[in-house]
Image (tube, rainbow, N blue to C red):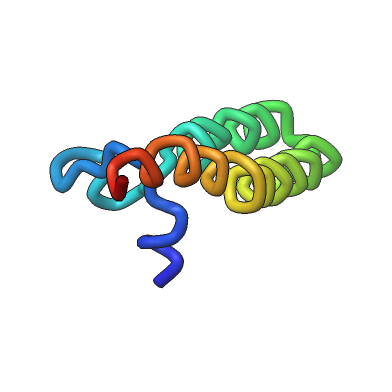
Length: 77
């Protein structure tokens, strides 16, 4: 159910979008974890976790509802 609610408007059944509806907000944030490992920094690791949580909350509560209102409502009419 979460996948249907949070998937992108241009849902693809191939490639990375098949497994991750918004790769920018999930996989793109892995660079913070890479930096934390590279610098062996616990504060950077904690900040990366916070960043990942906050950006996904933004995507879920702000961006995806806007995209659905903007594009899906036009398809229904």
